[in-house]
Image 1 (cartoon, rainbow, N blue to C red):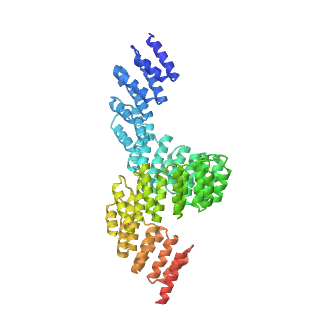
Image 2: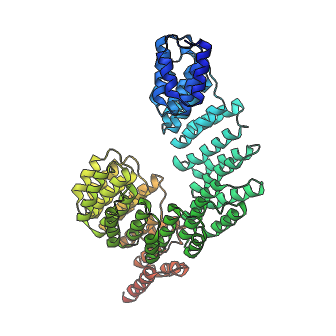
Image 3: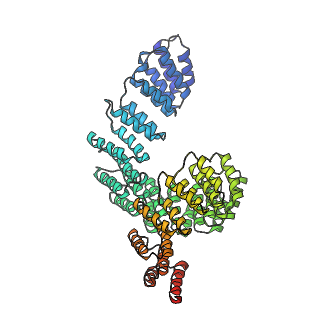
Length: 596
């Protein structure tokens, strides 16, 4: 029988060779197992490196069963926690953590990080708060780990509290902590619905205090502004980054380009494109795909094609992006040709074609493509179902909608809140309001979209009392909810109720949008409520929606029907791009004036 020293050497050699099963078998079968804690640390390290949870558990049980003195020491328990976390067994890690008699900063940090990375930010924050009730002080790793949990939850108040702790501990000079803090402020502006500019301005103040912000810090600020739709500010930060001599990377461009695409900010997109060329990131397939998407969504499909055509290597994302670009720009012939010559098609590429047809009113084409997708044995995902159901709804295709409902059940997507909301909307628009209500009642999760779909369904089916009842029961109401009720009252002739609902919306502090104004102005027109209409006109100017042709046309119509042709003409003359609706409103107003 080898001596303890020789046995340790042999076990170490086997660990280095990766023969973990042999090592565990030797340890478990020997009558005089090694008692040196370093041997077991080495074994656990090998288990961690090879993600060998089964062997790790055996070693853990063996240590406890033998009653080794080091079994309850912090260093070994930390290693066990780390092993369980790396293997994805968070419950086992927590069990070891709870059994610890002494915990150090590593014990707390590794658990906080694990909860946050496993999508449990609430548990991470609870653990951080528990840590503060002990003698163990948070360090830079604690703060860098807990701040993203605040960002994910949108808990600005908790984030501010942690910010104070960082300043008191002197860890703000740590670039990783500072970047996480900036990221928290920017994301809380987006997620929690706080006053975006105020929160992002706070993030900018912090950013400016950083001694030497690195590319990660700059990217956080750019992403913060971009994700909140503040494209010009994002571009401004990007320019400052260039002036500071910090080289942009692919993450920089992947953050800012989608914002340009969403806002249709072609000029800023072209400027970013130049930055990509200068930084040498034009060979990055993710960046080029984002560029193609930006040009396509900004209406410059020829530039998007030029980029795609010059790419030496394309992946399925690039192909899907250019196809989506042509579909979004209404060129379905080109989109279909590209779709047919794709080297491989996945669920995303099929969904792009379905969505393109559906959004452009080509409902039968959308349904036909969905059938072809099923025949090609490609499984639809939640996005596919959320795209095809509105096509059924708009066409009143109840039979096809029922078939798709069955596919959703078979695919396991019925619990998806977006898919569930689309199903409710489809049944309601197809006149099957009872089925829509049954689905709504059975949903385990509902969001504002679900509630709005149900309320809109009642309105569309002339069940205003039910719509009002649901509206009052909503946990929280957004602009869409208020707009649906205003439109319902207006369309059903209850114009006084429409005005009352509009006033309640204002009192509730919900900002009106172009749809709100386009819905409430016809109510003023029907009532001949010129004074109300003029007040709304002021709100439109203050909100910046006067340039919206639909709103402006509704204003022309309201003034004309209220007998104020001169005011109608003033608004009409200021419309930069008049459509047939604005012309008809003005002509009808003049005709009514002359006829009377």
